[in-house]
Length: 226
Ligand code: SAH
Image (tube, rainbow, N blue to C red; front, side):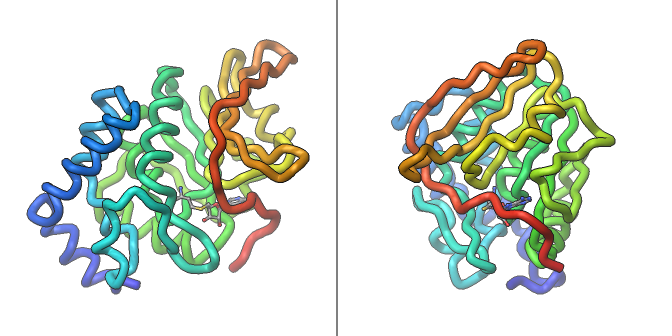
């Protein structure tokens, strides 16, 4: 783990390091179908390597998920780009993310949406992400240590709710915190345990579900680890 001092040092060096590798990552993402220029610009600019332990930082721009400790993973760049595109398609004002993890997806979203709330259930990850995001100057962002399955009642309703961990059923508390016309984007496991990126749109009391592509995420779990 970076000490806060080391992280601050690395943040000051942002832009000096890895720009070429980042550009190549974004070229690969574009070739894989990522179109939104806002997503491409943001991924090309933001320092993904600062969201990993120093020993793994050199692999930050490979198209792969990477361990962040506590059995959790930083999602692969493609999935971050894809989910960010799906979020932006809704032109949302208020977005809730469940599963802050390293905070990388959080940083990307915070640069692109007006106001963002993000919940993590593992205290060590929550604190580390909060420190990084503060040092990187993320704004209009609210972080909380909690079980995200219950959502963030006081801040609801949300135009988009994004889960970065896989549920086996749609969490009803989250559906209830969607605004009218709002969208929940989540990996969802089918009866055979295969995971699908799924988009659920609220229309009054109806929830229209659309299955997108197969994905692989860590599971959505209950409770808080302090
Ligand atoms: N977007 C993150 C993904 C991290 S993996 C990143 O790219 O770094 C998914 C995260 O969801 C993990 O940190 C895990 O602890 C968290 N998580 C799982 N269940 C949760 C829940 N019920 N509430 C909040 N966070 C949860």
